[in-house]
Image (cartoon, rainbow, N blue to C red; front, side):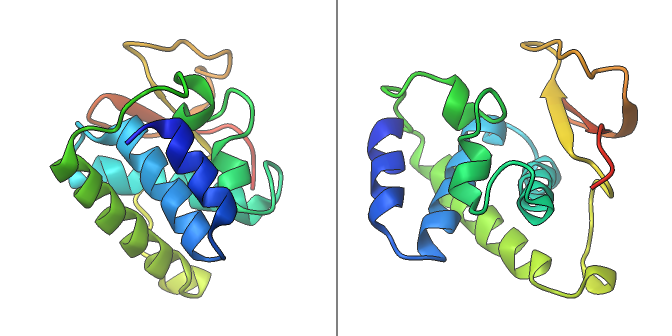
Length: 147
């Protein structure tokens, strides 16, 4: 499956299916080689950003916001070819959405307050000196903005 096809399909699907597809794609592209906890943390950051309204009104808008998540950074022709990782990404995204639908005090948060993350092997963002919430696998999670 090509990224461009997935993003096109997300425009045709009704909600909440479109948002689930966009979140699954983001988990796959950002964290398919990370632990379950690392994948859940990536999903949590995206969900927290959606709640903030600063990056868009849908998960698809949030994860495709310019230079924010992998769907807007990698080539549209990128193939999502690891079927097992794709299946795990879907499961992680759906679980994260169920968790995030709970009242704030009942959610199981992995990276409380984190609004950003970076894989330092491939990125050195300008905000990398912000408050570090956690490091999980190759990703460090930051509270850059109070959301």
